[in-house]
Image (cartoon, rainbow, N blue to C red; front, top):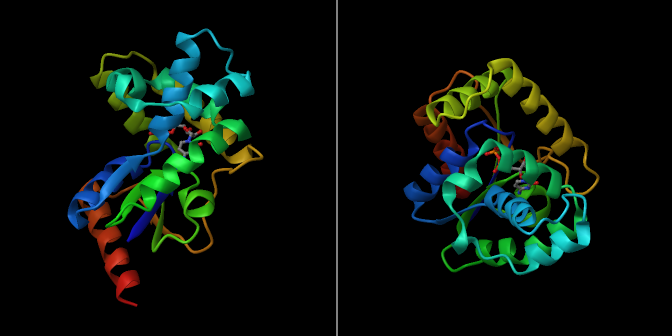
Length: 208
Ligand code: CDP
């Protein structure tokens, strides 16, 4: 079984994907980490974030092992990820890895922006996770504060809107809900409630 979980930044899709994978005993890939890692590698080797060919070469040989999770999860890495993710050659270089992961025996859960539309258009179940942008900014701001990364709520909200716009406007694999994806709006849901809702949808879809 392949489960595709896409959605906006800080919508809760990552935590949801992890919990769903645990519940069904499936492998899980957070595909945002791949784009984050390419952005970090670019920074380390002084490659400009607009140098598509050089970034695609880095993506081609990507190995997530050498990365510090904290570095990858930082806000700056997220913003850089969204810039490198707009390059078609970078997306193409990361495609095989994601498809191979999805097709492993037993199946997998992948979360990202284009899993249900581009990477696994034939996924057994597709979920689209979203929440109001103000609520997503509130969550991201709380997360950053807890990590000691200081930023005001207003700045986080502005950055969140900019990231949404960039992800939705890019020509290649824009962030968009697949027509056959089930919407989960987590604005006023706890993570537990969102997991229960996701499992109901998965069980119902697979039983058909
Ligand atoms: O956790 P958060 O939603 O903030 O970010 P993420 O899922 O780690 O993704 C970071 C950035 O990578 C996004 O803003 C997208 O531009 C890009 N991305 C993508 O283009 N396609 C994916 N499948 C996953 C992430």
